[in-house]
Image 1: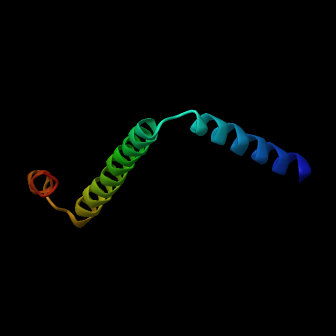
Image 2: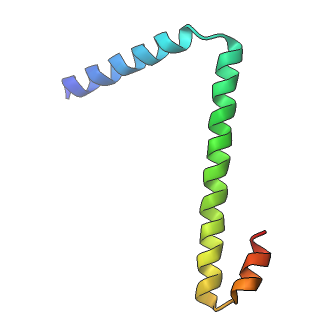
Length: 69
């Protein structure tokens, strides 16, 4: 257990040292990029879920395409 907690502490220390060398503009860029990627993944997940649900309900492909535009 001690090895795991030590490893986690070292990882956090390295991350904070890396973050400390950045400017506010760099951090804002990284946060914005992370939010953009998260938005893409959430949209992909729910579009896929909607597609599967409509497919199970027997909705035709052209109607499904119109809904997911």
